[in-house]
Every structure is written in structure tokens, then in C-alpha cells.
Image (tube, rainbow, N blue to C red):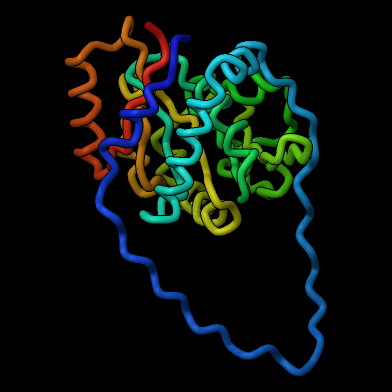
Length: 251
């Protein structure tokens, strides 16, 4: 992996959104109310791939710059839920996302990685995890989100894995359960980074447009030419997903 093109990664940031007005908070009652606490996410140790650690050593400063740019975009443009996608598979999307997550973990705020590659989930496997509950169980079977979330306190990160490919991806992300999960994650985390399916691998971006604030397109030049980039931009524009930038991985 040669480098991450940070200089151009956020060149296409879209116009700043106006801040939403906060609803008034009613005064606290004058009596005590016992509230049952939700279960905390399970704590796990993550086994980071050797490739990710090598990228950190060689290009750590570049990933740090990209992390700072995302934090600035969150603060100025209210971007919290970001989709990382690519035109094809094997473009380095998941590896880039994992390396970036480690850079973000060194900064204030809560960062969550979500595996939403519905046809080829890899995040848990890459990190040496074998989760018993995943995003698919929460959306399809109504299991508790807290049971699927994994905390990695040593790495200052959280993970929402996907245990297996989803049988009906379009119905999955069009469901009210998926929308509810994303709405809650948006409230509870400072940045939600979604490892999504490739744009041209059978899962259309149209079904994700209500869930994300912007997209980062990960590109391997040997696999994705200029024409494919134009098609990807058109696909995102067609469903109202702003393209935050293009991150190049391999020569």
C-alpha cells in the first residue's frame, strides 16, 4: 500500500449544514426514579493485522492528518456517520479504515466501527474476533444492540460486527430496525465509521442514503480507473450521498 492521498481526501467536502436546535430539557423531578441500567458492551482485546501496524509505522502522519480532517468535518459540518466504500473489492477499504480508526482512537471522542459490508463482512475476522451476536442479529431477530457492541478499552474503540453475509441486503437496510440502530449510534458515538459494500458488487447505494452523512471512496488505481470514479460519483449523487473525498491506496 503506497499512501493515503490525504491532500485530496477531503477536497470535495459539501456545504456546511446548519446546526440543529436542541429541544428544551424539562426540569428534573423532585423525587427519585429508579432506572434500570442497560447492559454495557462486552470488552474484548483486538488483534490488529500486521498490515495495519506496518501502515502505522510508515504512514502514521498521513493517517493522523486524515483523522484530524474528519474531526474538523464533524465539528464544522456535523458529519458523524461516514460510509467508506469502493468501486470493487480488494481495493484496501477495510485495511484503510482500520488504520484510520487507530489514529482516531488517539483523539478525544468515541469512535465506532460498523461492519455493514452486507455481502462480505470482514471486520471481526480481521481483528481476531468471533462474535456470538452481531448487527445482523439485532436487525433481523431483534436482539439487544448492547449485546452486539464490542468495547476495546485498550484501543479506545468500539465495534459493531456483522457475523455473516445478509441474505436480503436491500430489505435489511430498508428496515425500520436498521434505521433505529443508526439513529441510536448517532446519538451515542462521536464518529460512526461504516465499512460498506462496494458500489458495483450487487448492492446499490440507494438503500443507504438515509443512514449516512457522507462517503469516502477508497480507490486502488490498478482496479479502478477514471471512468469508474465518475460512475461512483454519479451513483452517490443520485441518492444524495455527498462525496467527502477519495483515498487512494495502492499504486
